[in-house]
Length: 212
Image 1 (tube, rainbow, N blue to C red):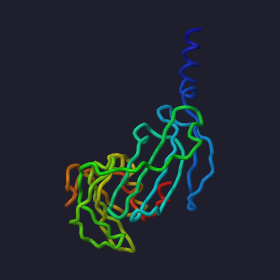
Image 2: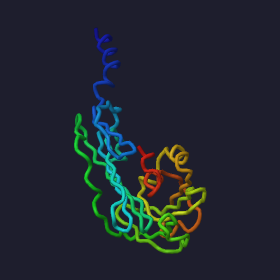
Image 3: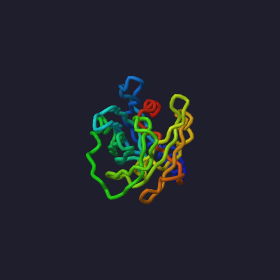
Image 4: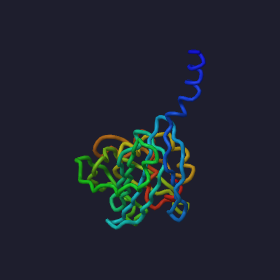
């Protein structure tokens, strides 16, 4: 009898501990319709908001919902000077608790880190010797090269750790044709830097819908 109970416990225990969450994946219009999804046992429900600003004016505002791992339940941003893109992912641990959209990322202030920046996509040219004060959780310097109108352009600036780690670089690079590197230390992005990461998730003025 105990053996039978053990067998049933092994079979059904993973199902018992899964969490049902709202899932909302926006299409090209930026809107979506809530569905329900069973999340893996090690994930929470998440509501994510991606906001991109150009010169202080909001350019993109996209909401999504789904399952999130613990390390994704944070605020993060990438800052290219004129262009800054922020992600806020609000997570919770009860069934269907992510019904409401995430709030806008909180306003951030300079954190003492400094990086070189340039942003050819904003018409600023390729002068990458200018300096940028990183804000909030932006504790890495980043460098990215992407193809725009069949021309390779360079963008540099500040980014949060979350956007400089992960396993999705290859997939995102296939969509955008970009190369990314991140490094720690003031002004470390003057030349080629180290670990590749997820920066293209928030690279502004790219096909942001490819994110979803």
